[in-house]
Amino acid sequence: MPGSGAVRLRNTNTIIVVVPYECATGTCGSCRARLVSGELDQGWVDAPGRKALKIKRGEFLMCQAVAQSDCEIRIPSPVSTSESVGTSPRHLSGKVTNLKRLTAEVISFTVVLEEKIGFQAGQFMTLEFPGVNGARAYSMVNYATQTDELEFVIKRFEGGRCSQLLFGKPIENQQLSLFGPLGHAVFEPDLGHDLLLLAGGSGIAGMMAMLQQADETGYLKSQSIHLIFGVRSGADIFYLSILKDLAYRYPQHLKITIALSEQMEDHESNQTANLHIVQAFVHELIEKAATNENTMAFIAGPPPMVDASIRELIAEKGLGVEQIRYDKFA
Ligand code: FES
Image (tube, rainbow, N blue to C red; front, side, top):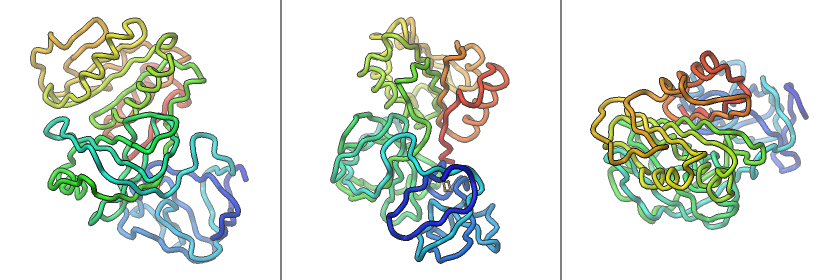
């Protein structure tokens, strides 16, 4: 059913329609659709993405809604009936293990699933935490073709309900509900692109998965990758030992720049020929990054950093929109 227009959905599994989405958590509004007939449970009624909806016209967020009967809906952007990338998303559950504090503001943990799944490097899952309204989207840090262990990294968000939970009391062994894998900003090694990875804070998660896959598949023997990783200060850098090891092993094809937005201490001992620590914002370093028609840029991080980087890539570097991949978690 390619193209836009009316789609008939039944509450039986007779057809899979790939519909537009970005955050899958009710925040971005990109999954807006209009109910023509039938009944829906609208899900999270306070979802931030509902603010721009014309509720009286029957608009709703597909990522939050559950059909209560056969429904006819109208989607204002292209849909298709075939999943072009990755494994179809599904509901999963798993247990939290290996909770670690990486910096004062960042933690990581692993969720051990009750079954194995496959996903592409760069994809994310939505996680539901007990006592917190709505799901949250987090990219997988690890990569494996099939695995029952998913690693996540989370930065503290001041005043956020999830942050209060995760940074407040131990959640080790907590059972969580997950949905996924989701996301279109995925690494496709077969395409042979040179990669420009632009990460802000915990936005590095999916890029760590890409680097792992690139390392394990020999991708870095032939293609180039430049990672620009932005954090506030030296104390906020995480994954440094992994990045240093990768930089050491791929002196020809891997370049890593860690961008400190606030303070610049002495980082001489951590610098190598292809790993640099500089004082700058991520988007300010794009102008000097090497790009060509074979470059694929990935961006993940706070929305202002994502927006500034997109502007820079298009206006200053002349990249086409098809050369830029990102998922807006907002
Ligand atoms: Fe549904 Fe973002 S609000 S995908």
